Image (tube, rainbow, N blue to C red; front, side, top):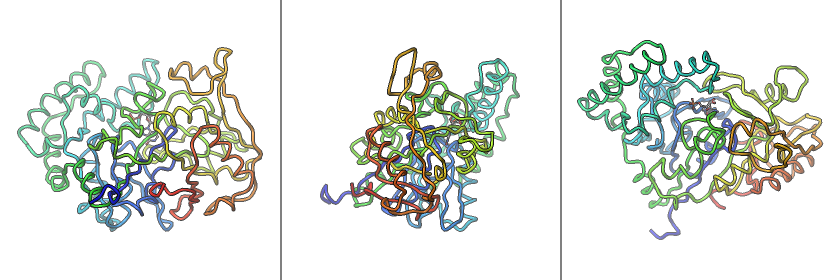
Length: 443
Ligand code: IMP
């Protein structure tokens, strides 16, 4: 096969604090993909797909699973809760989706086990009671599992193949976590046997799906198949580049698509940044353009209710605010975004005026990019540009020219401010509600 006939790969990442609508876009793009790979995060992610009016919520399994024949890879950068994975597989199967024949899980994924969940929740409770303030985690054990990975003591998917090795490592890890749970977090210790027995039962079911994901992605490309890398969370929740410490515990940025799935960065051909037409955030942490959401008749209430801004995983109300171009600038820089997909534009329909933050005032200075220090972000006062709104509905539109003039003007200014082209606009939750300006697989 010549270089030219090799498959092309697109990376889809969130440019804000997650929940940008990546799932829908990934699902739409799988039309052109032979495989979809997750490369970071775990079941803290929540993707809601609407296909022919029917809603499906996915957390760990790549969104490609909703297209027949598309292979789904869970790369080494993902933390896997084996019980959760199995129940997600069973739930999809009950809905008639074939999963096991096309789901491949990297052997190198660190496992999330019950004590990680306990530690996550007990630590949040301690932060709250001590006045340090919660991070607002999803309580799924994500942070503690990544800590074990980096400390080089994690149990990994491959350990499920070796019961004796698994038992030995589990004993050691449980001892450590029970020590922390009891001594520091004032919680209850967990018992070895139920964790071990359950893990072995799940292991039997997962074993046929274990794979060398990096090699499979390479092979898919060699055979001419395109791969889609599906990011979870968003750039501003990235462990290094986000609003630390109010972040998740993995790198959510595009560069990690390579390290988190076992291929080289030369395999990342086009980076699609997903950007909601306004901003939302779940959990704690700074959010310069945040608006109050509770009072009916306010913009915040409009965004929250019309946008149905409630977390897929935890059901928490999302915080809402105007689009922040200065924060997006940081995202574009870190991810090397090739093009943007603007989502949920229709939520802005009917607003009299629309604002976009184009920079901040900080200590009497004007800055045009989100600072790196969370305390400085808290002190930032947004500088806004104001645009006239539009009354016509944009819901379900599929042509750029059919958008109201004011909507086009707003979007044109967005791309000008953040320095990346808008290649797609999503105008509703269904696959068909999409305006395409430049196809990521043909760019
Ligand atoms: P964790 O990932 O559960 O440790 O949570 C850390 C932070 O990331 C919290 O503020 C969560 O609300 C946020 N977070 C984690 N996953 C998602 C997601 O998929 N969408 C939006 N926020 C998320």
